[in-house]
Structures are given as structure tokens and as C-alpha cells.
Image 1 (cartoon, one colour):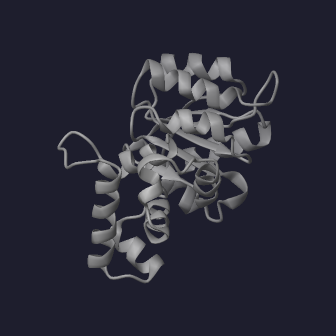
Image 2 (tube, rainbow, N blue to C red; image 1 turned 90 degrees about the horizontal axis):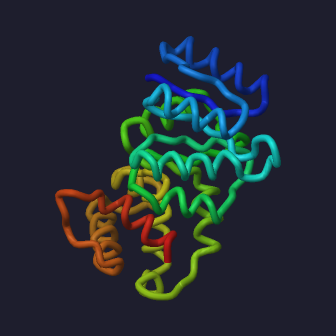
Length: 214
């Protein structure tokens, strides 16, 4: 893959460059601020960008706002947010845009290098990958009005697992359900959120976005 990295920590930035290079990927640019991120993505058109949230000059939310801008310019621009923090307001904006090709992982919760690399590949392939803690905090700030109020606790649990990018078989194993039961729950969630079958949209991603955007 062709990758752009935006990380203000020099040690972590260089570590990512070396790690990805050893795994056969090309790091087109490794920058330390959001303005340089915008420039690098526009110039190199990477397969995916790894973006920290807090970068100079204010060290608040520059990276996440840059990611939102880039996806607005080029819908589907693949972004993996890799941070120590969950910024719920901007995260919702990032996830509510063009569906897919977006991820949000927490640095302290990535236990294996292989898990990080797999997530990066999935985002580059157009999937949505969210750390469970990110999902929990986003759900905690989501209102219960509208169709969300109709979801049962079990359906909310299933939707949370869907938000993490789990397949039906993985959800079945996690929730101790049969594959058929998971399929029924997923179908019920789609119905309550007003998501009919469509060849042009991924209903699993849209269900999560509908939930977070309520």
C-alpha cells in the first residue's frame, strides 16, 4: 500500500515508517502537522492515511479536522485515525460522511502489531474499523430519540459489534448466539433504522452511521 502518516511524535512517526517499510508498504510522506497532512494527501493520493488527532499548533483536534476536510474533498479517501483520545464530536462528523474506508483506533489498546496492520488493510479496502472503546464513547453521547428508541438492549449490543467491523459469524461467537439468531437481529436492526435492501449501499455501515448521527 501507499501510505501517508501524520504524527507529531518523532519517535512514533519514525517507528511507523520503519514498521510499514518492513512489511512491504511504501510510506509516501510522514508529516508532523495537519497542514502538511493535507498537502501530502493531495500530492501523493495514498491508499490510506494514518492520522493522529492532536498535532501542532494547538494540540487539540487538528488531525481529525484535517481528515474530515480531506474526505469532503475526496469522498472515500481512506483514513485511519490513530490516537490516545476519543474526540466524539468530530469523530461523528468523520463517520457520518461517505460510508466506508475509515477507522479509529486507540494507541494504548492495540495489543498486537498484526491487529494494527490488519485494521489498516481493511480501511484501505473500504471497510469501517472502530475500536470498541470508541464505539462505547460514541454510543454514550448518542440520543435515544427516533428509531433508536425502538432497539432492544440485545439489538444495541449487536449494533455495537457491527460498528467494530465484526462479521455475523464473529458476532455469533462473541454474543453466544447462533448464526441464524444474529441474522434475525441484524435484519430487525435494519428494519427499525429504515434501511431497506439496496445494491448501492452497505447497510451494515449505514446502520452504524444512522445510530451515531441520531
